[in-house]
Each structure stands twice: as C-alpha cells, then as structure tokens.
Image (cartoon, rainbow over all chains, first blue to last red; front, side, top):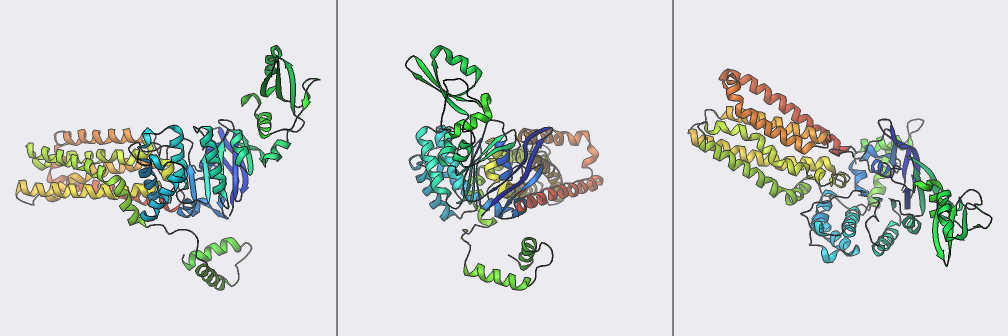
Length: 288
Length: 253
C-alpha cells in the first residue's frame, strides 16, 4: 500500500500555499510539523481530494486518486482542522449519520459506532447532544467519525488540538495501535505529539518540505547546534533577545538556557544532545 | 469489475512501451485470484439503502417544512379571489423550505467530512433532491386536486402545472448552481432568490398581463423546457462529480 504525492502544488492567486511537494508514504504513522500558515492544511485537503491541486498529482497504489472516485473515498478517513457537527445530533446519532454516508449497512454501523464510542471513552455520553460536549470530547467524536470505515489512509489535521494531556496520550496510543499496516498522517504544531508516535516526520515551511526523516534523524541534523548555558538571572533576557532559546530553567540564583545556535554562543556553553524540538526551533526560530 | 475496465487498468499498469501480451489470460488469472482470495473490504450499501438512511436522518424535517408551505398555499388558494391561480406564486417557497437541509453541511462546517465519505457530498445532494422532489410532487398533486375540487373541472389543469413548474424549476436550478459554485453565502443568496421570486410572480399578472393569456402558452412551455434542461445539466454534473473525486459544494476557506 502506497500513497504518493508527485510535485503537488497549490496557488491562491499569487500566493503559493503548497510548492511542488513530493513524497511517498507507506504504512506507518507520519507527522506533519509546521507553523501556522506553512501549508499543512492545504496539503491535507489536497490529499483528501477536497481541494484540486494547481499542479501535480496524488496516487494511491499507483492509481491517480482523482480517477478512483468512491474507491478512494472508501479507504479514506479524515478529520478536518475545523471539525464541525450538527448541534441537534447526539454523538451516537452523528456517528450513525456519518456511517450511513460511508455506506456502512445499518446493522454493521450500529456495532461499529458502539465499538468506537467505547474505544474513545464516549459511551457514557453517547446519547448527549454534541453541542453540550467539551472541546476534547468533540475532538474525540471527530476522530471516531474518521475511523468508522476502518480506513487504510487516515488523515488527521490537528487531532490533539483542544485535548487535555491525558486525552492526548490516550489518542496517541490509539493511533499508534491503529496504524499497523495503514497509512496515518497527522499534522500538528505540537512537537511532542509527533515525537511520541510518528515513525517519520515531515517538517513544512512556506509550502515546502524542509526536513524529512525519523525523529532521531531529524534531531541529529542539529547536533552541534544545541547548547546549554548557565547565566545569572539578570542576563537571561539578553540571551533570549540575542538567540533562539528552547528552554529556560531556574537553578537557584541562576538560569540554565538551552540555546539553538550555529556556533558556540559563549565560552561557558556546553554542547548537548539534540531533540526534535531543537530541530524544529532551529528552522523556525523566533517564528515558532 | 468489467473485463473492459480490467484490461484498461492492466494496460495502464503493465503496458508501458507496448501492448501487454496474453491479456486475456491475465484477466482470467486476476478473476481466479480475486475469487480465491476475496477482498478484505467490507460490503457497502447501494444508493437505495443510502437514500433510506438520508430519509431517516433528514427526511422528516424536510417534508414537514414542505407541508407547512403546502398549508400556506392551500389557505391562500381558499381565501384568494384568484383561487388556485394564487398557488404558483408560492412555488418558490417550496425551495425556501428545503434550503436549510441543502446548506446545513456548509453552515455547520460538516461538508468536508461529508465530502470525503464514500457517498460524497454530491450523492448526498442527490438523495436530498429525491426526497425534496418527491415531497414537492406530492404537494403539487394535492394542489391540483384542490384545483379540481374548487373549479369542479380539469380544464385549466395543464396551465396550472406549467405556471407552477416555471418558478419551481427556476429556484431549484438556481439553488443547485449555487451549491455547485461553492458560494460562501449560498444559503442567504438562495433564500433571497426564492423570496424575490415570490414577489415577482405575485406581481407578474399585473405587470405582464399578456403572460397569462392563452396565446402566451408557448412562452411558458419554452421556459419549462429551458429550465428543465438547466436542471438536468445540474443533475448530470452531480452524477459526474460523484463518479470522480470531484468535490461538490465545498466552500474553500
């Protein structure tokens, strides 16, 4: 199973949202990292064929998705960034409605809805209207609707947005467990989410992939550019203005700064092991 | 899958640089393999099952809103000196009544989720059209029965059908065109068109009295034909949009 993107481009007038992006995705979890406006959502909408590309194509198992019609939609699960719902529906009703649109026969749909409500810890609120739900609960309904047809390609745009830490861990575990031989692509700007579950990560900026690889590979790219520097508290602001500071930790009267810089920022700075956060900050700097 | 389609796919996948050899044997082998190892994809329901589901979720409110318009049209027919000739003025209201159902996905931002389902936004619109059209047909039949009862004759039945069809088809076609063009403000525009039509048709008889003379029948028939053709074009577009991964009615933000 393979989802390939070939020179995918999207222009809005003179603005380039996605710029000639190519990649091949096999089974596994892929993270799409990028700041707001990097082009993540536009790319995901093109992968779901919601948006027509200006140029390039998306292929699933060698077949162009625009020619596959319902055969492609049948293997697709999608959670949009701006997940909407019908306020008069209960969680169970909404999922049954989406199951009907996904062509799942009623008897099987009922079973599947119950399973997913259970998996996403929504059974107790299944008969409550979605409009009464918290942000995290709504997001879980969104994830449940994407999983209804047991999709081979699961595309989730900011799935952890609005979730509390416990819910985020739960969702991350669910996705890891679910992935198996499926393609799961999730976008986020929360680096720790990607770090925890993604097999491979794409980092996107200004419509292009600027980095691609496993989490350790990406972190390794900034080895020798991450420094720890202990300075008196009153000097902290100076360093924050001068460099990209990834972390700031108090130690008595002093602060320990984690600085991202090409060269050793000061004599007392010591090189340290990089993590994905550092690689991300190295590329996005102050913007992030 | 038909043999022709299978051959086309094989040619596409294997036939780079020439006609693949032993195509018939390959097709037969594919069929044998497919029978021996059935696909692990679950069976999906067909259009009629889907239509029943859409009716289950959306049918009742949609038909109730049309029933309310029917009631208003009947009251107007019974209280007006124009009798059932008043009815065609209300036909755009049957469209107004179904606008919330057709645009609710857009309004509640569910249209993207609906669009990537197997049935797609296009087929969903088609199912809603079948339900709304069925409802309108029942209402129109009831109004014609009322005409027969009021006039105690079937003499002007043909005229009334045409007078009803023109405003109905105009508004229906406008609504489908707005959905197809993915207009952000499609719903309010559609409502404005429906209400504007009611206003126009209410005053049409005084503004253009010749329009209701027997000699103008040709104009009406021509209008029915034109709008039927435009309506049919919209339906063809919906069917086409469903067959391909061609998004229908998605508002690009």
